[in-house]
Structures are given as C-alpha cells and as structure tokens.
Amino acid sequence: MRTVKVIAPAKVNLFLGIGARRDDGYHNATTVMHALSMHDTLQMTLVGPGEEAMLLEPGDTAQPMRQVLAKPESGSGLEVGANMVWAAGIDPVEVSDEANLVCRAVRALAAAAGRADDELVRVVVEKKIPHQTGLGGGSTDAAAALLGAASLWGIPVDSGLLEQVARELGADVAFFLHGGCALLEGTGDVFVHALAPSKQAVAIVRPAGGVSTAQAYSVFDGIGQTAPADMEEKARAAESAGDVPLFNNLAQASEQLHGQLAHVREFAASQPGVEGVLLCGSGAGTFAVCESYDAAASLSAAAQRNGWWARATSFSPLGASVLPG
Image (cartoon, rainbow, N blue to C red):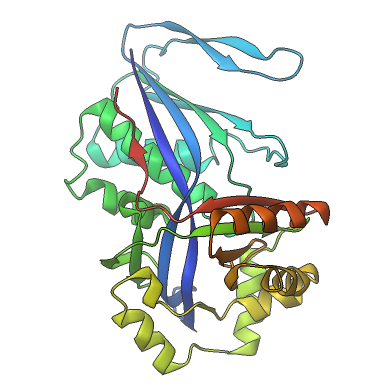
C-alpha cells in the first residue's frame, strides 16, 4: 500500500477570447490562465494485488470518521473510488465514481500506460473550490489525480503521457499540469508558453445559482462577439501576468443567463483597493485583482454580508503538485 497527497489549485482566466465554433462542436480559444493559492487536496492510496487495508476517511455529521476496507478483488482489474468531502459553505454535488472526473483520470492514465493489475486506488478529495464558479475545480482535481496516480505507479511525469491524457479529459486539465500563468490556444488545451506569474491578492465572489457552460456558449454563438484583434495580440505578446489585458467575451452571454452577475461585477469594482474585475470563465464566480490582501479580505467580507459566497486568495506560481512524502 502506498499513499500520496496532491494539491489541486484553482485558476482564473485573465484573458478569454472565444472564437468561432468548429466542426467538432468545440470553439477555438485564446486564453491566459493563472493559478490561485486556493486549492483542493487529494489523498490517494494504492492497494496492490493481494493486499488489503483498512482506511480511515472523513464521513458525515453522524459519523465524522469512518473505516473503509480497501481490498482488490481477484480478476477485477483496476478499481477506483472517490470520497468527496465538501468544505463549509460549499453545496455538495452528488456524482458517481463512474462519472467523477478524478476517477476517470486515474482510469484513463492506467489505460494509456497499459496497466491491467488487480489493484485499487482510493481517493479522498477535500473540496474548497466551489463548482460552477469558473475556477476549474473539476479540471484541477483531474490533473492532480493524474500526478498522484503517476507517482503511485512510477510513471515519469515528463513522459508526455500525462499531457496526452489531460488533453483528452478536458480543455483546462492540461493547464494545471503546468500551473503558474500560461498562454493556451486550440480549445484552451494547447500550452503555448509560460508567463511570469503575479503575486497579487485576489477576491472571488459567487452569488447563488450557477451558469451552464453549454448554455453560455449557446448564447455566445447568437451574440457573435469575438475578441478585438489588438487586445488578443497584446495577450499573446504578454511576458508577464501584469501585461495581460483583463478580457472575457463569454461574460455578456453569462450575464444574460444569470441576472446577479452584472450586480456582482459592479459591486466588486466599487470596493476600495480593487484594480480590475472580470468574470471567471463562464461564471458564476467573479474575481477582483486587489492592491493588497487586506483589500481582498475586506471585499470578501463585504460580499458575504450581501449573502454571497466569497474568499480572499492570491495568484500562485504553482500547478497541481505532489507533496513531499
């Protein structure tokens, strides 16, 4: 039995220029993503053939900690299970192991690496990144799961296999293997180059209710608002996060779908010490770049008094990372 712990950071898009819809149904995109200090944590345990272990995991209010027997069945091949533990203030999401992106990532890497052993991977995910916020919570957990599984199985992280599997799992997943600040193209899945990251403080504000990414793209297709060429060129030429113009051409579509988003944007922009405000991806989170952590904390507290979920954090130079043993 082996166990690793992996950090899975959130992200924001400093620049998001969605282009035309392609024949495969996806959209071309030019984006600059930046990792945040806010993160989920994954604890991953591998139980190999012929082994068994009694694992102690977080439970519920009735049973705060519970024992889980981890024992691969003969002839079962790879078994993957996840226990999602949601932080206070975040509404839990029920998802099966078959649909969970963390479990899918582990299974996809095993298939790509040709593993066929009777073994079990158990994952405890401590969720601090809320869903439907535009912070990449599912994608970063998938990237962290890839790194954790690679560590457990002895797969070199620089072999190209993780990048290949990440791009198959979703557009944002590959970014989290790099982290920091980066320019991506394609559908947002092709790493172009890194930018010098920022150290500034950030506040995230999210009203109740989410935005369906599919619906946002549908409304966007009707609007047809592409990124100005000069602004997109400036984003491509930027060498540091501070050089990137804050822009998101999905924001108008998302604001049409969620009436509170414009109000949140105006509120955040009016707070002391705020230097820039932008919707996180397709929403429903909005991020504010602040002159200090105190300003970010004050904005977060004011937003919470309005009944919104909010957190103060900062930009981070890191990606998904396996913690030292």
